[in-house]
Image (cartoon, rainbow, N blue to C red):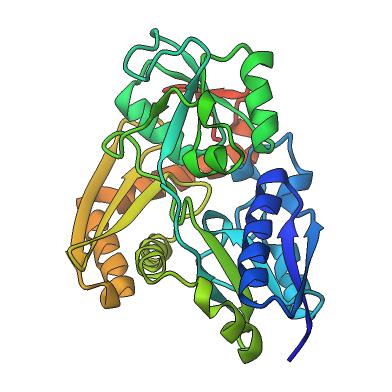
Length: 332
């Protein structure tokens, strides 16, 4: 068995925190082994002046790590689960779904006002179409501004761009010790999270039983079941960065409860439903809920969203950096 294990990760502050957490868990389990972090930049890290929806979403923050993993340059790759495409490259698998942090979004408001109390036309920064659509459904008067960059950069832009507030994932804020900045934990009734949000995933080679056995203690059955269901829903809907899809799986009384939402880019149309069943049927439950959402109109919403995205790609997109109802601008 190898004595030195190389852990690959993005080199952002949050990604390095996650990878160090994995390293510490493994080092505690296997004190006789040496674990080494190898940070690298991905395509998504290099392109910071373009909305993610405009540069594609297939492995923007994972591909370079997966290439290194397939080439045996690293032994495992640590990802934010919400960055992992639902279709992995051949020969790679998710070896462990680590225990999930609270998956919701939070509001960071300069004035200390909650979503309900922010003034009409408040300027809110986010990099997510999912958040944009659900926020505009809740408050159509909001003016949504795209914010790219790592967590530290986005927090800085709150002041630099004179925004009223930011919407961010709680997990990242919490892991970097910035809880004091949180104004409000946003209710799931208002905004369902991204698929896999709050969870760390460990990707490995399918033909590497040694590493699979090594990381097995880090695999959390609840996280595996709930996120498998969410990813199955996303895969069935053929969703990605260009279309606003939210999902949340939870285990209660030994049942998997799964909620999903699909919304139009301007927030005017929104369909939402839920399903429940045994955790061992996680993938089937995700697919079944996707089918229910399609029957409620999700298919047409997604077609329209993709059509709008295509028009943007042909040059009809406004470049002012914000999105409010009817703006025609598309951001991830």
